[in-house]
Picture 1 (spheres, rainbow, N blue to C red):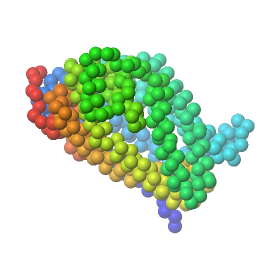
Picture 2: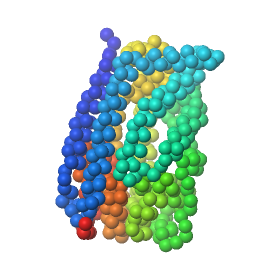
Picture 3: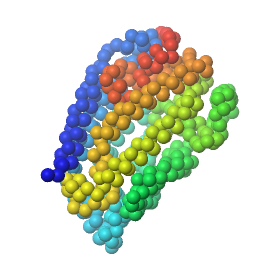
Length: 424
């Protein structure tokens, strides 16, 4: 008797939904608490706490509804064998277009085009509500419906341009890889990741935002001085107009080897009250670089990718696996989709472990900034950004342990040291 792969996948999806919903409800209860954590009293203003509480509760309600609808759709697609039906229909479309449906690459591209359209349609109501109702109601949304639609069309255009050569290459590799299939697939994805890391900031990101050099002045001098003191090879320093879409703030760095760049959101500059707070944020980010956190995460990702393709190679020719999901043929893309479902239990464990490591790295980066003498400014900037972004003030410990890639503010301030008190 063949193993019931489909039933096992659906069963685990429901099991994980129940578990994560339980955590969501614990977090929802924590968000309803009417008072700040004791360590944040006098640090976070009561006004900001009330606004944060309202915002996070609304986001929590939205998340509960979105997850429930997603579970219903995903379960229905698997249980009612929508995937094999859609695979057949995409082949019929290829024939109607006057092309050869026996060509797996053409068939796959038609299938993925239909999947992309389906995902855009089903996700659009949630995206619109999240952006133009929740984010707008709480003062974060700055984009117009026109900009929203233009962004969506740009993303679809990029998918149409980038997906065909990538998907075609994967199919060719799987069909011809032989005994070295795993190595070929992993090598291809490694090269692709380097290519995307190179072209994204220079060719793709500018399609959505405007990047301008940070003007000469004290802030630029302080950042360059910090980078120089750490021997960080800073080549360019940009400000990005994140405010055209949202009032949320951020900062990041990118680049290979001796060609590093730092990007500040204009909202970060607007929200921080002093240059020292901004520099403290960058001291934290540079701590990640100095401590090789990005390198460790990149290596771990490559190991996971290699193991993933190894598992796929073991199961890709299993006819019982494909038949369990309703397929009488074994297309490459379908094999990858099915294997992704099979790997879901392991992926949850990997994500949990990754969050544990990520939180540890955040503590280390904070300690690095503190060692450089930015403890006070870092505390101030963390509190400022927590307030301005209306981030979660009361976190359920189980929820944060499972979901958070960054430690809660209470834990970060405790690790940095005694907090500075301020009046409401």
